[in-house]
Length: 227
Image (tube, helix red, strand yellow):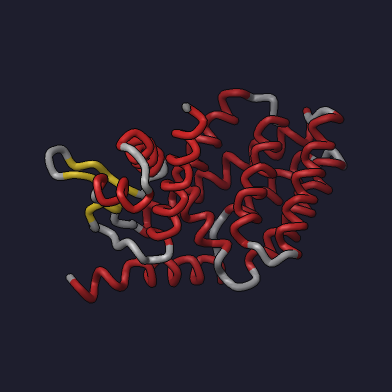
């Protein structure tokens, strides 16, 4: 029973997340729990759990006595959060290059191979999920529980926007190449190279910054036209 509820909540969360980052649900739009329950044929509990997960990622906000709404996106805050994420990931990479065990290195290679398979299949959604596993391997290999917890928490908040990045043309292929550099640095036990590779991988800069801003603005544009 519990597993079914988790499955329903995850299915609903994924659908709402996809709708929000692709502009099908607009910033400021109210989410009707009863309508969603009917649409997905689920009870109130999975809807409530999905809302809680979306609140944690910053995609929706809850206003007392008013309801649950799609959060309005702030570019400046997102960029600041990605800057912090890049530093946290870099630290994880640096420690992983020094501390990773052989079984953890095997797990990292296997995670990279799964990312490669998804990229070759042209499946950005599958790559998104496998990419999460790849990064989690590095958090674990840092052998710093506090750092790993902080990285996972911020990653959760940025999850939809990391997914949005992967929809930019050629980003999946570029991301995979960056993964290869990360794996090689960790395999060689080169802390500085691993730190730099991971920080550059996450940080939004240059053309990636322009593409990201363009994607987010496309997401916000429908609301501006109707406002």
